[in-house]
Image (cartoon, rainbow, N blue to C red):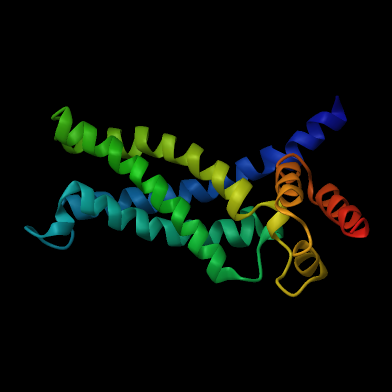
Length: 195
């Protein structure tokens, strides 16, 4: 039982806690920028003072903050040498999460007609953020910062992976969802020896 709890902590809870801390910081940034723009922080009558564009800008700023936090703290042992590709993938997930946020805000503000500052915050900051956070954690953990994607581009693992067929690559990727670093590395080394 203790081994099971330890394994769950190492593989999931540790990441959830760190992701939550980084996400809380990102939430504060998102909340502050969103509300600052909505209450005319940079003036009236421009496209950033509306709820949708204010949310786009707020999430963009929060995305940069959370990428640094997740790259250098939450998933630091899974960083890749190609940080530009990692940032691109991180941004794709963040934009997808933004679309979840915007959909919740759009439905509340424009479809249901709840147009107060409180309603905008509940739909975007509460409902949208909860749904987008679940989506983002899953994709950051199992795609952007996945175990099987951490080898530097010039490593033996990267060169050897060229010899794996699509089915073998899929098996390695699927196994990495449930393995810790040591197990994933051992499995990758075992598969390389059998080539």
